Length: 156
Ligand SMILES: Cc1cc2nc3c(=O)[nH]c(=O)nc-3n(C[C@H](O)[C@H](O)[C@H](O)COP(=O)(O)O)c2cc1C
Image (tube, rainbow, N blue to C red; front, side, top):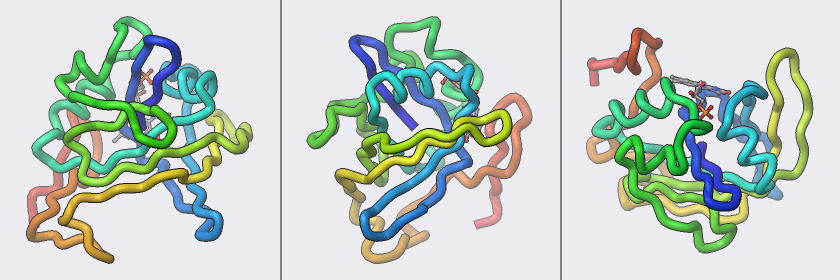
């Protein structure tokens, strides 16, 4: 998940992504309220969600272990180039295999997290996605736990 407000850019890995509506297309993400990316997304009222391949796993680990509050552009610090999304101007990772540009519609406190519900305003995917993911070409980071860095499931 990536967001930009003013000149500040931040991003974090999220496992809480959920598709919540087909028509209109809507998604949800649960965010810890102390997170900097969350705060930027609330301020800008939009964010992007990207799927990245396992070649970027170490960059994702960096996004998970540092706060964006300490740097101007957390994506650049992690070595992930980005450009502005065509629809909402949200940060879009150049390395992304798929990206959604999302406009925030509603927030709701759920336990110790804030649920962000957003409408998908634009979507793009690489050729690795053609109705379904071709796992011979798309090699996702599969979340299998955390031990100082993302633990990857090696068996595929
Ligand atoms: C695999 C993985 C999934 C994560 N999922 C979430 C999530 O869904 N929501 C959340 O708030 N934090 C999640 N985190 C933690 C944030 O990525 C982490 O706290 C990050 O440093 C926040 O950075 P920020 O303060 O710059 O936004 C996850 C971390 C990992 C490693």
